[in-house]
Image 1 (cartoon, one colour):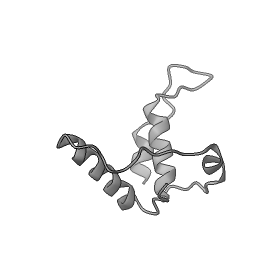
Image 2 (cartoon, helix red, strand yellow):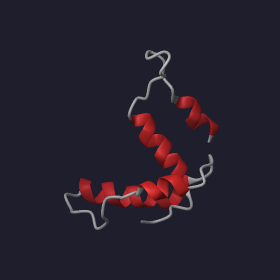
Image 3 (tube, helix red, strand yellow):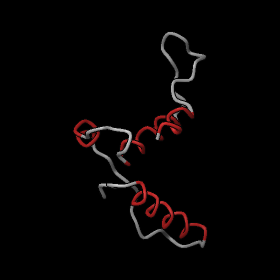
Image 4 (spheres, rainbow, N blue to C red):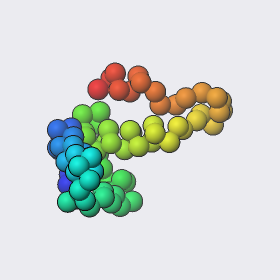
Length: 82
């Protein structure tokens, strides 16, 4: 798996992947596979592309607050901070 040291690296991979799909071609890259160990050992911060990718995935799952299930936990404020 690529380390995606910058957002540009991640963007380029996504652009290639979806560009090929739009052309009806099979993408040359394999789906990302992230191990539990990689998730645990990663140093998370707002500038790290991997961290933002994980946060984006979690946000796409519509997480809810345990004490108030109607409250959104992740919203656009996190995007604005980066």
